Length: 391
Ligand SMILES: *Cc1c(COP(=O)(O)O)cnc(C)c1O
Image (cartoon, rainbow, N blue to C red):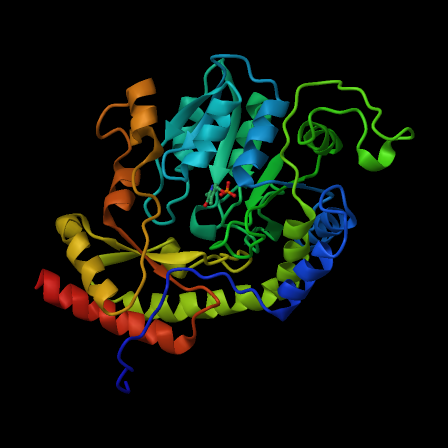
């Protein structure tokens, strides 16, 4: 391979905002309508079309989306929701904020997704729901979980923050269960600055989310016959998406197919380049997804095998010196984050796979801000770093 230019910089993530996004924001700013406008509605329609969803409800961010969904179920204190241990803390916080109790289950080794075998044993007579997360965008084998949810009458929420463009059995993530929640945070697959979306097949889930994202009012801005007059029929939040964010979302969604294709190509180059390194395992799934299924390729995690876990800081340092940004998904299993550890007292060793993923992960970028050449560079530099630190 040719000599790499010195001072190469490969950030882990970078939002790609172009002239269209900038023009849209300027257009919105020259208009008095900053909320309750046509753009949030259009973004909802466009997003619903992209996923094939009957309903899409725009909200302030993905945490708000998940909070709204669990809140809408009116969980009673002590009622439980099964949550993967290996996820963003927001998946669990949303349950906790809605008054429920997250009950954590471990991950499976090859994909980082929830270990399906562990779900049924965790169901009790207090269980109301199951949350799953498509880990790093890799599709959860959802059907057996849908079957379990039906069998026990549980609500199934999919945390799809990293799963825009993720399909399993030909179905877009978020449409297997009862609600799917998305994030448009800057380094996700597309961004609105901050933003989120709920998709659902159920009219009632959508109706309730619309009402509760806006204080629980009985009619929205455009439905009021006398300006300023409304009633409040239930408890609610202010979790709406504003017009600036929605305008960005409309433009980003147009570019999303290109973003996703670039991610998949990058992921594949990296996966092939890294798979013969003995000291690591490539996650999620080694990149081998059954034919009908599509990984949205948020990033690729090189996971150090157990014997080498203590070398991670040095390897990350070497990569950093080579200009390669890395991350960790996720730094600890959620039940071992101090808040949850203190609250529920899960014992050490209760989530061995999630522990291994957290302590061994070096998450590498594959985003559309990077080209094929960058992937070859990462492969070369990771091999060099491992050679230097481990041999
Ligand atoms: C980013 C992320 C969230 C939080 O999304 P926000 O829009 O920042 O609230 C939740 N779950 C997962 C899996 C994430 O990656």
